[in-house]
Image 1 (cartoon, rainbow, N blue to C red):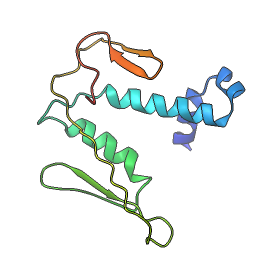
Image 2: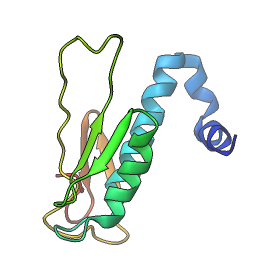
Image 3: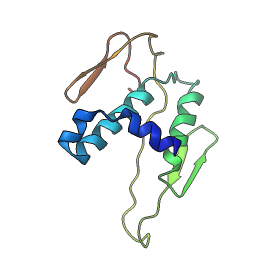
Length: 120
């Protein structure tokens, strides 16, 4: 119930005019922005790993962490006889995120007001 209340608190009234798909897109953008705000310098990505693991767990059947710190998740759809899909992404960043920076959004292009965006 708390998760639902948190999600509902994010929804802005003007989003509802655009329909459910628009609302879902805005909520996804919010999730991405939250992930881009977690520091994860190479070798120190524990914090971002835990958040990603927590968010991913509800969508998969099984999740493990290997000895390198990679998250490996499995999800079986239907009979499980369909194609295999691999999603691969870095958890770490080259540089640390500049504290106090803002995320600048210009259409599909996001950048940082200072330093790196994160997730790059």
